[in-house]
Amino acid sequence: MSDSLKTDASAILHARGLGKQVTSGDKPLIILSDLALDVFPGETLAILGASGAGKSTLLGLLAGLDEPTSGELTLFGDALSSLDEDGRAQLRAGRVGFVFQNFQLLPTLTALENVLLPLELSPLADSERRGCDWLTRVGLGERLSHLPKQLSGGEQQRVAVARAFVTDPQLVFADEPTGNLDPATGKRIIDLLFTLNREAGTTLVLVTHDHALARRCDRCLRLDDGRLEPLVLDEVEA
Image 1 (cartoon, rainbow, N blue to C red):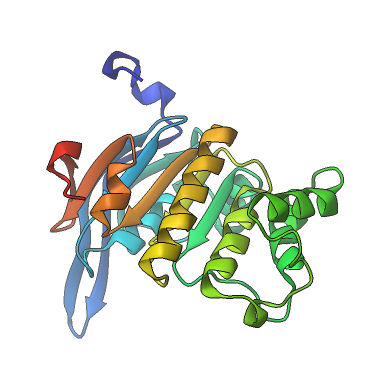
Image 2: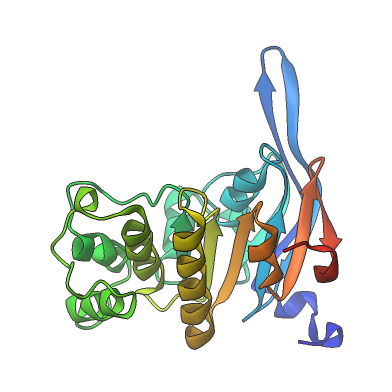
């Protein structure tokens, strides 16, 4: 997408002056400060930063899972500040998927039941068939009834990827999706994530400290000292 087409009106996610501050002891701790960001349909965006830079905090704010201390954030044209927690959940339902570092599968549910969870909020026709199809697409068609403890880390993350895409979301957030995986398994998960994202035409925003992973995205930003700054892909070392 050319820069001339990247207008604020076309952004599906728009943030200005975004800040997050918490209290540490008797002193305020600034995590994010006066942050600006636009995310555009169909792009893949990597946000890099050192451990503790606030990447996961930022992702939580962008997804409406947490509330900023200051600033404005618009998702799909709706100002999140005008919505309560239930309203934000309703806005995300069926339109936003998540892939987390620690998988966040419910241990008492099977792989299929975990994948079907988002469809409870955004019911689609023949949801069980959809869940089976997505698990087959990620290579787990024979593991539908397995519990998370019966799956390897890579298999659990594949379940999480299927869960993220099962509602045909417009936007997927991924938080260090390979952080708990060995390098070979991590590469397979990333190949899968980008393949599914390309096939579905989804917008992907991921936070990572992995420069090789970031290189695969259309655009990279670095989170440093609470602010985002552009990062030229050629500067990213594999």
